[in-house]
Image (tube, rainbow, N blue to C red):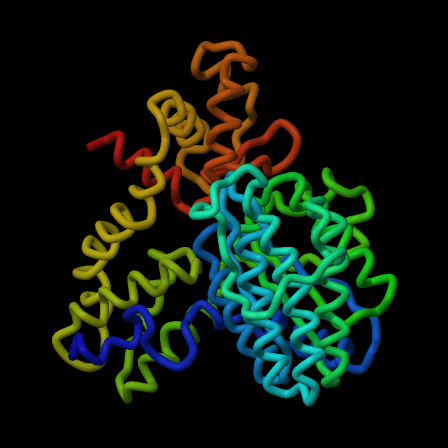
Length: 398
């Protein structure tokens, strides 16, 4: 098959295969957009799931949906040890610009931009030199006495309220999309919860859509006890067989090509239904196929190339971030689960390594902070990356 036409290459096609099987989430968000725009209360949304299930791509599609409805939309990716104020300012600036196109009162838009600038300027430390102070790129003067207290919780409530009112002026809403939500600092999580609570009380047309690892609900609950009432949680999992087949067949059919049923069987077995893996194996199979249709032999020939690419770019890049002590902990998890995608008991890991549980806490906590493992439930720890245990075992055999 022509590699230039490969519909599984990054950025190819109109709709990435990760979105196959996500109709329920897309439909639910459509309802959110319509309800909020009509002044009806609606909870913010949190998407949770392992890495490789397509949360980021889905988040991007939700943003596109909001923009098509005339909403203001801004998207950020949270980063460990980085404060929320600066990236959130940039995202809100984008959302306000979206709304400004439809707003008939430039002065009103400038008022909100002034509040945003006041909020953004607090991202610089008070003792920072002038050359080190971050400038948010907003032309209007900063407002005084609004969203500029320096307390992120107070400031965010005021800023979200003003942006929501601007959206209400044009009869739509605003949405802030936050990827890797588990990496937010505790103070920022608390501020987001407080702002969402205030918005839910007033019915203001602004929602937050977050995406992160399976333990995000626990992070939010630990911050504010009422968080479960603020958010609707949607677990994003691997695709079932029908949706996985559709994720493969739809891009191929758009190229007026075909694939044999046995090849679909092989692709599903290799990928486990995880969208990221489906794309990797299908891309390699397309490139390996000498002719139309793609056969099971093509999949078998292509599998080592796909696995090598995953080993370097998906698994290896994460493994390299771990220290020797952390790698020992990861390998113990893989040994105890025999490479399956399931949790391992923290006490069992200690016994396996012949160590006291307390001595392993630093490694476990660091791995959680790096996003390599998460607490599946009390006393259990699991990989955030599907098939990571299998990768570690195969790597250890080499």
